[in-house]
Length: 250
Image (cartoon, rainbow, N blue to C red; front, top):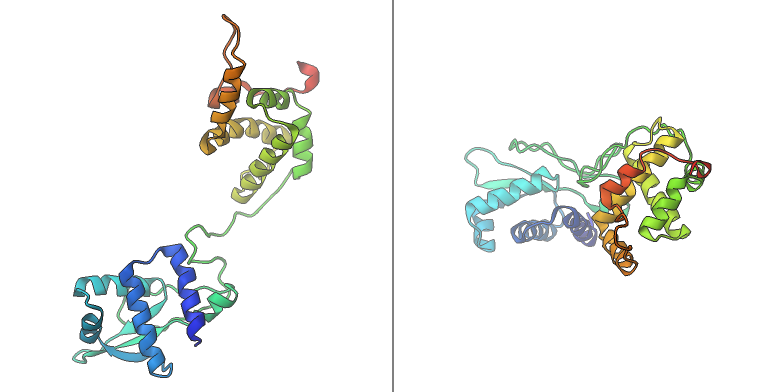
């Protein structure tokens, strides 16, 4: 085990799990105990000694220790009638060096089942947002879908409604397409369905990112004359574009 790699690996995990001050102090305390023992791992430590050294309440200590174990960062076991508890730290060096493996998740059974960095996992359990992606069945490539979209009347309407230039439309469409690919939402969709979905997506996306407000400010400068219809906003605008219209149809 490498001391620096262990520290770096732990802080990488901290970015995912936001460890408490108790979690951090307990881990680094045990890491130093292991280091002082010339990296004999597993090693023994008296819980009363840990509580005294860290000035921790027993329940706080137990919660923090269980959390570190559930994340596979350490493991522990104890024998009935023995004051010292056996601790084993996971080797975080692989996590730090390449992140091509992940820390195991161990059930809090009290038995030392070992901990480490197994290979061959389909996803990273340390990443809360990581999960196997759906199998992709892409019917329409990005370039084809975008080229179809820019030839529709609805493309012109969206550009006018949100005062977007061609480059902006291309950027929004790329964001839309990539996000839907990651979710598997474009599987088996026709080119018309992809274009229609983009009409629904763009107003919601602009509203969620706050960019729609800037568009509204631009429109306020060009206020319509009295009696003229006010421009649609948000989902209402998207509903107007529910039908794909080619330029020759307007």
